[in-house]
Length: 458
Ligand code: FES
Ligand SMILES: [Fe+2]
Image 1 (cartoon, rainbow, N blue to C red):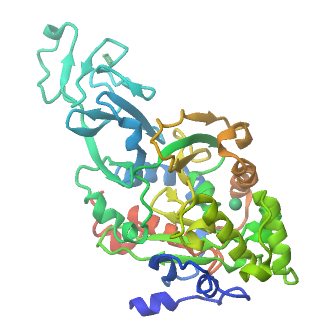
Image 2 (image 1 turned 180 degrees about the vertical axis):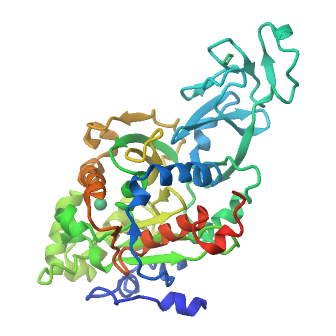
Image 3 (image 1 turned 90 degrees about the horizontal axis):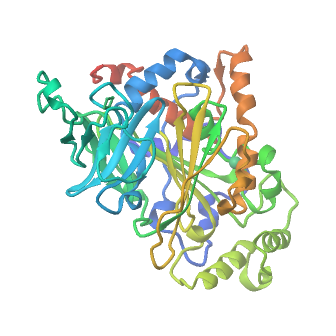
């Protein structure tokens, strides 16, 4: 399909009211070029099989063909600042150690070469990578350091005794790993996404790092953050200042054969929902004033409630260059398979992982990255249990309440998956196009579709 066709593909049309592009065109400080672009792909309208969320076989397939062979975010470079700093990254029942070695960041399978013990349980500085069972230890580079009673292992070569490594790459301060030694470089995997994400987070500090256990499949949790269609039912309190149903959804195809595409959405702030047909711009200004705790200039002066908020926030942060959209809007990107950085000045980043070996449970990680001027050491990790509210993490501020609303649906959704008589989940043609795209890429990656089957090594 030609690019032009992809870009105009909007099955069923879009919501009434002005489009994102029509509103952005009126902003006093216009957005960066990427936010003026649009892209869609014709991926059909087929539903998504329920088994993808609940079946043991599908979960096992994901472990073998996705998690063992895909680039995935493990931590921040900031987590590994000094030689000897380590980080433990777990996904499903797989575990990896990342360590700052003398020659850069290395990553290893987190298992002892003696009798298989997990080598490290938590992050932190360590003088060596030491197994607590019998005391075998390794240097940061993965070479053997100490082996008590070495005379008793005459049958093992130095190759047998070197920790197996996994590939490491970095982008925007994030450390990615890929356990597949034959994987394409991270640059090929990310494709055009970095060109469309001009927000440099390398110097930002980690001011919050909160993980929460959830009773649902990792994809169900992630997909709850990939559309704004749920705002009317799940977050009705923000309809007065958020253009939910006008959201622009973009799906960008892969640029490199065998690698995934990526997607994003932009939901505008400072414009009311198209569902509130009689709401005036003056009412939007009042709602924004209350939410942001600041009296915004009248609409007659600035031209719109959105402009009143943008001008006020811009002068507050003292950056006259920054665009209205980067200041205000909810712009979420998705990097396959499970990483979602927000764009603009927003500090928010999400990651979703299966929890242990269970398709019914997952971990949602929230990282806040903030330009603090002088760099700060990363915030301590906080783990919230299945029954803990997000509001137990005060470092998340007002967002904790929104997250509680988001995750309140998920356990019931997972239970519904198991009782539904419908064999598949229906997706909106446009507003859920990112979810459809994710499943398309997942199917390709797992070798489910013919074109990928021919390439797959498994
Ligand atoms: S299992 Fe690690 S030293 Fe024995
Ligand atoms: Fe939400």
